[in-house]
Length: 136
Image 1 (cartoon, rainbow, N blue to C red):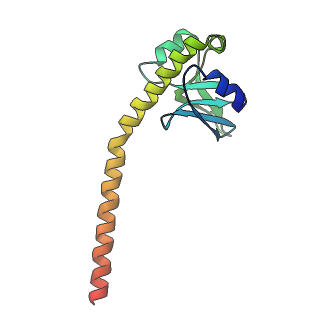
Image 2: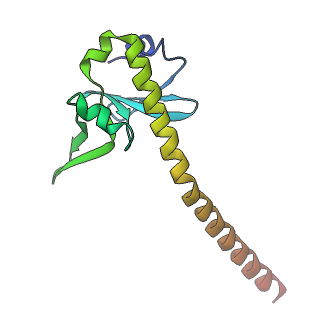
Image 3: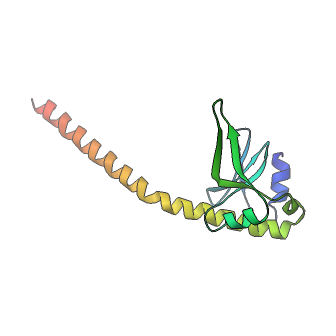
């Protein structure tokens, strides 16, 4: 899949950003990555709400091979091939994938806040230590 093919494929969905990623492209909308176009196919973001839809179509989650094992990434599922010929239905699946990606982003936010708090505490300690050294 090349960039022009992907632009055409998502034309009915709306504007997307397509960036080089791994051996293919990452596809995002509104700053959120919701699809991967790789040598093995096109994968959409999925979660507990949308995985049953992929399973009903006989789709499988994204997998890759390391030297030691096969790794399964359950957050991305292969798009059913029939959707490449049905832009309107593909648009619905793309919206569902974007919604799944947005839900995942919301679940990650509390961790980011904790990390920010830890960084702020660390900076405050460092500042206090620097002041103590300066006053000595």
